[in-house]
Length: 124
Picture 1: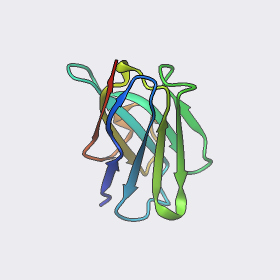
Picture 2: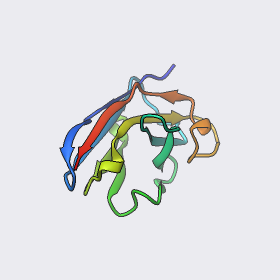
Picture 3: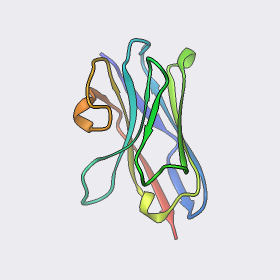
Picture 4: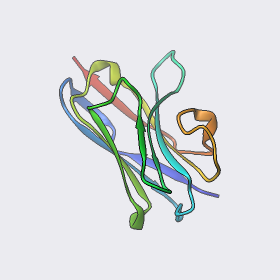
């Protein structure tokens, strides 16, 4: 079993920055992908970004390209999401997820292990 825990959310003004951290209870060195998703009230969970643990390749949702950066620290079993120039539309609960099998890395169905989520609120 893999336990995934996020941290780093909070309240920030528009234009500000936050850095989210995702850690695993045990090594996920064999994971295929680690991803970030978000869910706003009344909306479906949507893809934000993912990083391949195999080759380090990354993907981003169009809405966050150029503002968010995903990175990984393999030795610490940690994945980060640096969020800059935040907008009120970025307000949501952000979830980290991990998967150890091939799958659609930009869809929630492609992940097996999820964290409890961390709230990000951006005020205008």
